Structures are given as C-alpha cells and as structure tokens.
Length: 543
Image (tube, rainbow, N blue to C red):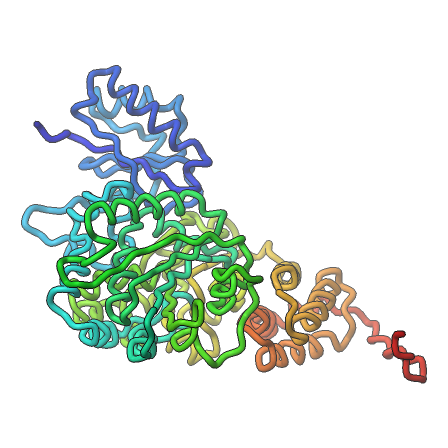
C-alpha cells in the first residue's frame, strides 16, 4: 500500500470543536474523496497546535503550512487550490504559525524536538490511536523502568533530573515520591490532579486532549516507584473531551497489556480510573481533592498527616498534576542528564504556558524554564496586539500582578522567589493600558470570595473585607486608610488562612500594591472610615 503524499492534521480540542472542527474535518474528508484524492491525502485528528483564538486549525504536512479560522464552506476552495492545483491558499494561512517538523530519516525525535518535552506529540499524532503513541516511543519508558530499574532507581533518576512540580508550588517531584515509597501499607495510590481550576489556565486540558497516554504512562511509572497498584485521574467535569480521550486511552492500554496485571512480565500490577469532580476551585488543593474523591464535601484537611502517609481512604498517596507526570516518561527514557540540558539550573526542563490577553498570538506554548516574560510577550506571543504593555498576571487569578519591572526576570522558581514572586501554574495574562488595575483586582477578589469553602474565619471574613475595599477602589470611593487596611488583611491571610486558597488571595493584592500603588491611590476618596458602632453593652445570649 502506497504512502499518502500529504497529511492534513486537524486540531480537535475543546476550543476547536466549539468552533466547528468536526464539521470541517468531515467536509474535508468528503471533498477529498469526491475529487479522487482520498488515497493520496490522509486526514488525521490531532491535539492542539497552540493557537487559542484561530478557530478551526489544520496543518498540511510535508508542506509546512497551517490554515486557520476554517469553515466547512472554505474546504472546497482549499482542496481545489492546495491539493489539485498545488498552490497555497494565502487568505487562510495563519501568520507566524507553522506545524511541528516531521521526523527526518535517521534522526531521533527527541533530538529534533529539543525544547518540547511535554507537548512533543501534541499536534503530531492522533491521540485516539495508541499505535501512534507507541510508534513514537510511547510506553518505552515504562518498559525500561519495569525491566531494567528498581523502584528506588526510578526515584533516584527523577530526583537527579531536578524535576519540580508544575502545579505552582514547585515541590521536588522525586522527593515527594521518596516520602511515600518507604511507608508500609497494603494499598497505596497515585492520583493525577487534573482539576485545573485556575482561570486562564488550560494547559493540562490540552495535554490530556493531545497526548493522554503520556499522562497514563507517567502515572504507571510513579506507581511502580512508590509501590502503588492503583491510580486515579481526578478531572473537572467540564473537561468532557479530556474525559472521553482519557477513558478511551485507558481502555486501549488495558487491551494492549500496558495496564492491568503483570505489566511487561515484571509481576507489577497497575490500573487507572477516571474520577470526575464537580468543578470546585478549592478541590485543586490536594487534601480537598481527596475529600471529594471519597464522596465528601471538598474541604481541606488539617496537615499533618500528609497524603504520603495517610491520603485517599487513609492510605499512602502520591499526588502530581498533569504536566508533572507528562515529564516522567521522557526523563526515564532519556536520563536525568538529558533532562537537565533544558532550562534553568534550579528548575530544569521546560514549562508549558497558556498565553492570553492583548498579544497577537495567544495560545499554548512550551519553552525552556528561565525565559523572561518579555520573551514570552514579544517572541512567543507576537508582541502586543494594541497599545503598550501595562501589566501581566502570572499563574492565574492566584498569581502575582506584575509590572514592567519584572519583564526581564527569568521565569524559574528560584529567580522568581529571589524577587518575591512565584512562578504559578502556567497562565500568562497580558494586559495593555486599557485595563484598570483597580477593576481587575476587584474581579480577582470576587472570584476568591465565590470559590472559598468558608470553613476558616480568616478566609471567610478576610475575603469579604477585601471585596468591599476593592469595590470602593474600583468606584473611586475608598477610605483614606483602605490601602493600609487591605495590606494588613492580606498579610494576615498569608499566615493564618487554613489552605492555599485563602493564602493565594493575598498574592494579586500585595503585588498590585507593590507595582501599581499610585494607580490604586487614584481610587481613594477624601472620606475617613466611620468609627465602629457599639451599643455600649453586651448583647444578650440567644435563648
């Protein structure tokens, strides 16, 4: 059977499906068949290429062109011009976009795709065909771990790689595994945290939609390392396509003997199950996630004990997020030294970001750690769409609001901590001068107030006070001491809130005070705070 002369890779993810990607793909297949080109040009579903606002996107290989904003009505012209007459349809080409390079004869994919570790398959393979994942070195790392390495050697390799958790906290992954591995128990668990509730962050969703087997393979390697035979993927109910593809991938892996009993003849058993959450932001915190999985209200637990000692159903549990687990197969397959070639010394590897806001090319990118915010805005985001750079929020609503002073700070955990900031979960929201920091800050606090579980007093009442103050700032009626009061409340939240939700709410406020105090001051009126009312006597106890 002869090979097709061209492949059309249609990006199928939650964004493009809404824009009509299924209809475009079906029309493309039908039109190619009608013109007698069905055997010469193969249409393939794949994950996201990266663009977030380009509608339906399709790449043609080996021609190296990406078409965007496609509708079914555009397909006959594209087929006629590109595949019959052999000339490009310039009006549909996305400027600045190009498909990932096709592998060259005799070269390893990992050599060509330097800089893309997590997303190297996204936009290149059909995520619903396990054979394509296996053909691109999929499950090789699991086989290597089970047949050539001991569990402790796997943990040592992950430790040596320097991989840090990509969920925002940056805790060393190998160290987290080593805390669970020696705990004696009849049952242990691996949980993939795919809740991803941070506004503006959808990197984990696109990883799962574009390369679900990589996440499953990372979980299986983790299970082997810590001695767990069961894994769960806790995922938001809104991520319907991710749920479908993960469920399909798990079934395919079981059928191929890559999940289940006696994997690779090693005697190691491991299986995975999808658990769907109800979409509560607080369930991104690992103990609240566990409570939700156990059928209870998603409220954070008091620690210690930590999940590594007593997690799901009271058993030792290791929890990593999607991006962290998606790094594991490449580390085991290629070695820690290879992984350390990428990125900053203290934060080796790459980081996946969703870049949104007033940039010319919003979307999904993967870059070595240590690139600067200026590079992301200018080089990867294509520069400001209109106006000038005013501020950026790094890491979703729980992230810091940064000014121009931070544009050239390397984006890695150590460099950001050195200037008093965190790297966050992977969202970069870029804003020009049309965005008022007072209104934006009020929107952030309202989000936290809505999502707070209300179980601790600092968060429950502190967020209400912050919402009132930022509301007055937005309206230009703030009291003269409101900025000072707001800062005091935030510092109290950082040290006394029960879980990271309340603690994180301080980040956008304190960073806005640091870089945009003058702009916030413009919302302060001349009125002084009225004195607190007192009845002069104690209230009677309720009967």
